[in-house]
Each structure stands twice: as structure tokens, then as C-alpha cells.
Image: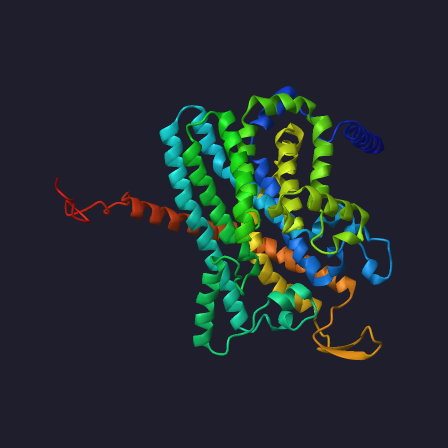
Length: 478
């Protein structure tokens, strides 16, 4: 028996030693080729982006100082670890939302581009039409359901703790209960309408502000693909880069979050990912990808406020003020986040190792849940998270103002760091469970409704084309 134990121990040690001596991801030539032909990495990256968006909202609840690039406003010149470049990405929600737009352009254009490259133009156009129709329903239906859930929870009084708590994101974006159920119905329809209105916010689910821009970006992609479907790959990529630069003008005038820049360059990257250039460059990716990805993450780290307080962000601010297009100077945080996101995706598509790493099962699982996470996390932050964070605390507490006087704050104070840790862990675990259930049970229902609507509106549903041998609508006889 001792000899057996020693043999097992020796075997484990040998495996650990071999694992430590090998690269993190070792791929032979066949595996590299397979990775370069696989696009599932986009799901993994989307899953990571959704987690960071949630993290940015948690930061706005319990660690707002991380939004700043340095803590000079707190009497010290030494930044905290999570205020430094790359680490501070936990507070950079806008940069990760930009990735959603880039990946949307990348994924939506991938199949039509593949068909166009094989001269299957009619099939590509049909695919575009179907995708455009389905995309609309697959955005609107889940968003409506999430709003209905949040509205119900709100009207039952389950948001009141969050609304009265001393957590910035919660008390800013948590709605009040309606005065009556009649008013509540009006508020529900108003919230649903605000989701699809420009520069407005759905009070019951603030993160849905981005959905109207995602829908608009989808339409940009589909219309531009119709224009360029017959172009050669090189000219099509050139055209989409041109569209992206041209879009800066209307982004400046409409105030959108650089939708055109991100989605059009996402399509250009989709085209590039299918080219021989990327496959040739993949041989140098172990040298090229790491610095490119680091630069991209630093760009995405640019703070939205007080950028002059840290040397690294002050340099970026000065450079942008002198070099950027006027449209990019309006919101430098979104501009740097968008440019960094484009560069990050480029660094990934040229690297089989990065693609393979992002295609691991846990990340693909997160990618599958990314949209439910985006829609549902606000409800869990306003309920479970807030209930634990503010449990058993008096509503009023005293603070010392800048003038030295004592002031009473009529809000629930935040608990200890340990309580905040527990609140994050419990609420996000329950959120992931709910999102998994959503993806398994509810999302397929939306798919069935979309298919039913598609068959009905295109006349493909059984019994739709003819009733008793006659068309549903009369046909004109020429």
C-alpha cells in the first residue's frame, strides 16, 4: 500500500512538473488551423464583457472611488491597485459595451461574407433578410420580458431598500413604486417605449439604454452589407472602414455612443478574419498579440472623469485633444474604449492561442448567458444585493461636511466590506442561476415566437397561404 501511494504521488508530481514546463496553451499545426477557422471565441469574449459590465455597476454601488484614475481627491497621490490601467477595467463599463457593438458587427456579417466569398450572392441576401428580421424580435422580446419582471418587482415594493440605500448606482437608477396600479400600467408602457427611444432611459432597467443602439447598429450592418455584397473581399473591407470613419460625423451630431465606428469596423474585422493575411500573421502572433492586447486594454482603461489626475491618462487626454477627430473628442472615454476594443479584437483574430483560450467551455457558457446577464443583473442588484448590503442598518446616519459641520443623511448606510463581499457573491450566484434557467427555458420560447412571426409574415405557416383553396388576401389579375 505505501508503495502504491508513493507511485501515485510520484505520478502526480510528474504531471504537475510537465504542466508547469509546457506553455499555457500548446497547439500543434492542426489545432492552430482549427482554431483559426473557429469563431466561437466571440462568445467567450462576449461573456467576459458581460461580467465586466456587471462589475462596473457594482463598483458604482460600493467603490465609486475606483472610477477615478487616482485618489488625489482623498488627500493622497498614490492610486489604488484597481485605479491603475488594466486593473481599473472593472469600472469601465462603457469600454465593454463598445465590445458588444464590435462583436455584433463581426458576428452578424460573418455568414453573409462567407457566402459572398463563395459567390452564393442570392443565399447571402436571403440570409441577411432572415437575420435582420430575427434580430429585431430577439432583441425586443427578451427586453420586454426583463422590463415586465423588473416592473412587477418594483410595484411589489421590493426595490425600496435599494432606492433608499447609500449606493450611487442603486439610488440613481431605482424607480419608485407607482401611486396606483392604473398609474403603474402607464409607467410600464412608458418604460417599454423609452427602451427604444434615443437618449432616453427605461427606468425599470437602466442597462437597456444600449439596446436601441444595438438595434440601430444591426440595421447599419444589414443595409451596408446589401450595398457591398458583390464587392471583392478587399474592397468590401475598405468600404466598411470608410463607413466607420464617415459615421463619426453623424455620431457627433446625434450623440450616439460611436455605433457606426464600432459596428462597421466589426464587419471589417470579420472580413479580415477570413483572409489569408490573418493566417499568415498568425505565425507571428505569439510576439504580436501580447503587446497589442496590452495596448488595447490600456486604451480601454481611459477614465471618464478626472483623467488629468493621473500621469498616464493625462498624456492620453492631451494626445486626443490634439490629434483626434472632433467627433471623438466629445466623449474621450467612449472613444478610447471603442478604439481599444477594435484593437483587442484584431489582436485576438490573428492569434490561434487567444481564440482557443476564449473558446473554453466556461467562457462559452458565460457567452451563452451574456444577454440574460445584461438584462437581469440590475434586478438582482436592486433586490438581493441591496437587501444584504443594507440589512439591519438605521436609515439615517451622520457625516462630517467639508465645513466641519455634522449632517444627517436619510439613507441606509453601507455595511462592512465583508457584508458587501457576501452581497456580491450571493446576488451574482443567484443571477447566474436565473440566467442559466432563462437561457434553457425562456430563450427557446422567444425563438418559437420569432419563428411563428416569421412564418406568419412570410406566408410559410401551414394554412396561411390558402384557406379552402383560396388565398388569404385577394390577388390582382393582370
